[in-house]
Image (cartoon, rainbow, N blue to C red; front, side, top):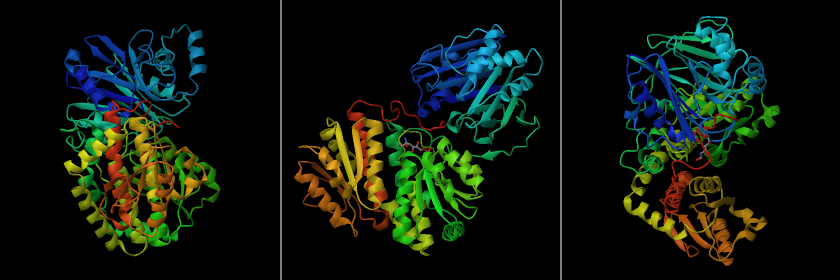
Length: 590
Ligand code: M6R
């Protein structure tokens, strides 16, 4: 989704800072970009469609100490220079960048047109600088003017406004994230931490219904509704700049797959007493529900199997976007488990709101420290995967699954056994991710890259991994991939199999092994090319991808070669796996 960056302070390279900041937000997905900064008395603005990666920050080195920038993912209005942010008022003294949607913008625009305002874009955002300009006719104070405008807005948004005359940045939040980076020399404001991680790790979070105003010397937090000041804590982020960089890897996706050499161990490094308390909460809850979106949702489906097989306990999953239809079953004694990498996904936040309205407790399993979900949950477990910047989620998934598996073991009163298994699994993954293994998968990708259809089957916890495999392959390589429960094949999908269709079969060594192998035979009998991901070689496989035997953690191990295969399918087909078309890293709109 769109990215926001702002700086005001003592530094005089704010223009270059904005370019660098926006580059760090590229992973969120965008189609145009823009910056505005004050040099001398005037506002300079630059907007472009396409990528910012080739832009040289030195070209924006004119002395300036206040700047804002934006990467836009088009919603209202096409991908054009005019629609790119920032947007300005009539007098070009106010520049605004904005994420989210102003739902009542049409009515506001009509009102402004009647007052003589002219608009240059098709965006909802452009009403903001004009509305603020109108308010400044009644007050001299920029912050008051912005607050008055906020009171008129409908929708989920975050925006940042620069005022040249007062040299102030004012930002407001209603549904989309904004974070303040506190530096000795000034303040950063961004939609995501990596935008300023190179400069500071001290942050303050803006909550919904709040705004901030800063001149670079101090920052003031206000409640939008009341106008009262709000006190904020400073939080130290544990992520390092090194973790947020690609290093020697060509793409973030591959780097993050490789991070799984040690991310499982970090995920399960949890306070044992806390895990036991959470297990008790699940045991005694009157209904435990799991929600997530996309890949995080697949971790939830895997958890349904973990909880059933390991602890004999029933939990219910719904994609977060569907959860509201199940609110009838929530009670104050119910528990909602929210699984999310970013902690900012709009549908997930909505599901939390529904559960809270019913008085239910919320446990979140999150990667981003201090994210909205993490801050608004009753219990939070951080998976400590470090920044995940590729749109395709990899290490966050396996971290989420590891934590869920650990909780399932705690629920079965076998926490130590679960921890040991997961530590061993982490070591096995470390061994598995060697250059020869990766090269083999690269060669396999080369062999199947021209196919336009690919199917994946699994049973038990390998079924959600079949679904996840499909997401991974689809989103980065654009091959049509679908995952099924092995037993479902005969009920429809087998009609799709032709001679040579690549089919991946996810296999473990457990009570369903014979069944999934017989499903693989059914595919082979129809001409499919069978790629088996399995601890053992089986006759039915045309290609065997060996994985270590990992007992109840087999799903965690089995998904890793598929992540690598998806990565190479993208690269071999000439696609950029870090920038999949039409997708964004953090989906902050419903
Ligand atoms: O940040 P979240 O975990 O809440 O994000 C959920 C999905 O948007 C995310 O997993 C998405 O499906 C990924 N692109 C999949 O790789």
